[in-house]
Length: 233
Image 1 (cartoon, rainbow, N blue to C red):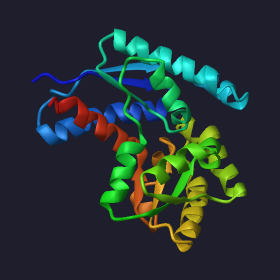
Image 2 (image 1 turned 180 degrees about the vertical axis):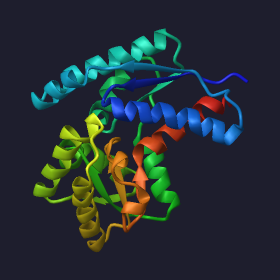
Image 3 (image 1 turned 90 degrees about the vertical axis):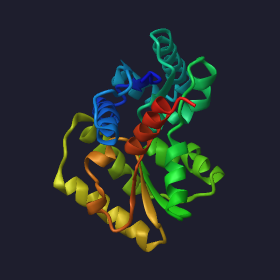
């Protein structure tokens, strides 16, 4: 059976890119019982370059490079693409405007999962940009979902753990406890679930680590890509 070819804009970080690939292929086998999963093209970026642009506030350069990557995937045969990271969705509209490759926005499956659970208020954990700037909160608000954000000092701790540990595959129990304490406090404030709005956080935090339901953005995004690839109508 023919499937659409998936293009992954990856490397942002390598850990999350690998999790997308494994999720798509393993989930296909689990659902269909064979190895006929869709073809997947991956363009792995230089993470340091994107960190440098982020720190310099040069989101225009990040958007331009992501658009170039998307076009390269399209020319290699991808039918649609996804950015395997939450923070670069800050420039999703600019990236989509710069490529003819249709892109699947991460908030579409995330917001749908929250709505299906009957929830309206969630906590948001992610990078400093994802938590501190408006694009993610506004994206959820447009979809009828309110989100609670950690305090500034908590945001700094979450961001440090992502940048210094998770993107390098380092998992520490003490860092998990930091996240758990923050989630518990936001749950006490009314959060019904927690959006793991950085695709590396699920490496550290699973459902069993949280007092409220977790929304694994990497899993939801990857599953949505699989659905789009295998349903051709």
